[in-house]
Length: 453
Image (cartoon, rainbow, N blue to C red; front, side, top):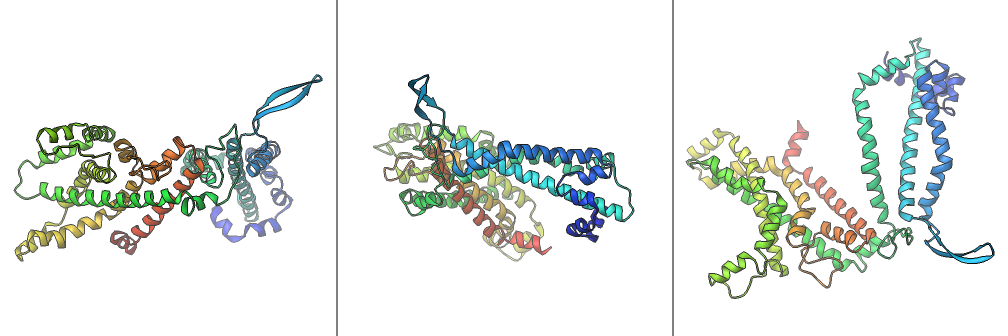
């Protein structure tokens, strides 16, 4: 009888009520039931875990919780102390609010991990009660180890990456979220200064306060950019794929290879080259001037409107080949019977594209379009490497005319050191991306077909 089947017969609370003293004491002394039933190594591991936790709780976790609440009370500076009857100015290190926040969050995660181990201890005692009541053999440490090495080996392998995720993903993410509720900015930089909890003040500042004049224009441009960048790449990528796959076109592989060359060149190199080409004194303006087409340099990157069009155009140069490759794969695998039947019925190429080719391409590529849209909302490289967010706008705080929310977030952290505002922007970007992805993806035909099967 497996442990899973045993666990279904008697609940955990019932097992502790009916169990012996060894089962009951295991709720207080971890591993007691295992030690009493000769599972020495497993019992000692539970017991050592509890002892280590109690020592750490008194010496480290309680101070960490206190620091998490206050975020420090002693500011770094000079204080007057009486040393051997002489008053002297002595430097005091003070508290570091940033470290206190990190240690406090780490203490919470440590407690949650211990709570899970404690629950495993209770389940182990419960399973021992069930095995004894059924007259089953109590497994040895070797038996448990073989279970982890065979039947539950996937859980064993997941333990190490899970620890890494907790330390290097969950903890920094929670830390970033917490900063949105503090006043950690350029006026409160640790360790010299302390920062404190301020609640929803930062959200109010971004949405309705002094930062609203920057946030809403930048947010609007972010959405406009994401829509145009996604639609242009999708449309022209499909058009290019259809042209290359036209019947009768010779050297299709050569044409496909030529357009794919842009993918082979690293994106940042292409963007930096384009930045130099479109400069006011760059080769493009110089060539147009020599040909007599213009009398003054065109402000490709220095005028707000021109810069936005230039960014969308350059992004097409980078993104169209990717869409072309995906669309080519779809077009080459379309059922030829439908197209041939439509041609026999006298349908034009445009009618075939509108009624057969495009709907099937859209059905397959809709999830990819959603992914591209979210990627363009967070497209840091194109904006930062091409315009740096410029041209500057005196009405914006730490943002330029072409800055997206993600590049504005970067400037708030690196340039302005306003980590609290940057954290709020990060949370809002995540909220917009998550809500749009959820609503859009669940309404696609591909999702509905998948759930229907």
